[in-house]
Length: 159
Image 1 (cartoon, one colour):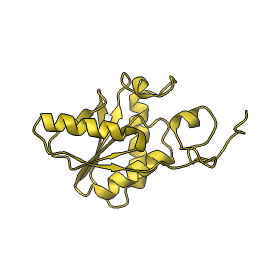
Image 2 (cartoon, helix red, strand yellow):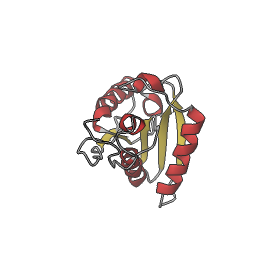
Image 3 (spheres, rainbow, N blue to C red):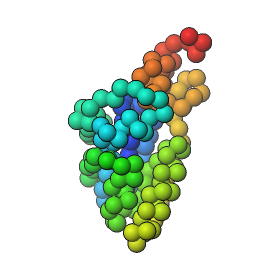
């Protein structure tokens, strides 16, 4: 199975690891990770914030994939210039791994694929990984100093 997953991955946290692990689990042929370009990344954020340059994020992502890949899967990182990227452009994908908030993007990718005459993807939704406070782990919360990349609380919710 050829699998796609995408994101900004800045910083990489346990929620991202869950997505990447699922993609690696399913992707016995190949895993393609779409990484948002420097131009696209700010447009995908719920709150404006500084994002590390593409090459830094790419290097961190490759290191993380090497660590997570216990089965020697073939994987590559592709630059995403638009939100639908490589999964909508290449016909030979089988599945797309998404988070609950990006499931709608998976549906849009399948619409684009249908328009291009490609087979639809199986959209695999990976549940949120929760922080100690019961809220989803997110890069925004990590950057804001509320939690660490593993979801451990770093400050009181009231401060």
